Length: 270
Image (tube, rainbow, N blue to C red):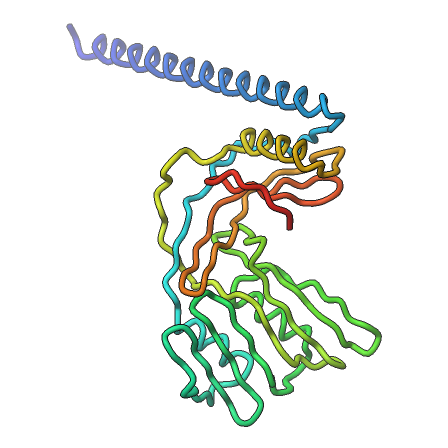
């Protein structure tokens, strides 16, 4: 067999192989679309039985991330203390294995606990309070703060923590502002990185979370007439000595937001 003929045969075989692979891919995609369509129809019918509407954003094929466990990050705590109080910090004698206390002169202190909570008081006046709050949130992984201030510039601001691009709905920081000056900060600080914990069982998918929510709504009598969106987030799990994040689905309704833990199936409200 001459070389030219052999080359043509190889080309034909490759074309047939590519055609087979393309056909298999198209069949697989069609099967996925068909399964998704059936799921949408079944969930829509299930919620319609309770006179509820499922909007297009109420469906997701995203995969829940792993649960994360954290080790206390003393360097990050010190960075937060220095952000508000400055670099000339002194670690107080009251510090122990569960609590770290930093001071800077009389009346200024930052306290951090091993469970993640912290409180900073006596913050020295430094520039615009709103700008300072926004800068802190950008630096230490929180969403943009929401301000509630009166005409004199006094009030509060609250921001939700973010980790790996997902909101941690029950992990927040609150800023107290008096006449345009930041006076105190209280909240929960997450370490910069966590360790993934393998799932002991299959985590809840978005459809399974919707069914779990509907069961909860029926049993609790929670009021809602539509599910407008669903998205992945994290739920903070903390104690006096430990800190972890559990993946959850945020189910947004026309009345309120509900959170379904991907591991335990527990439903809570924000």
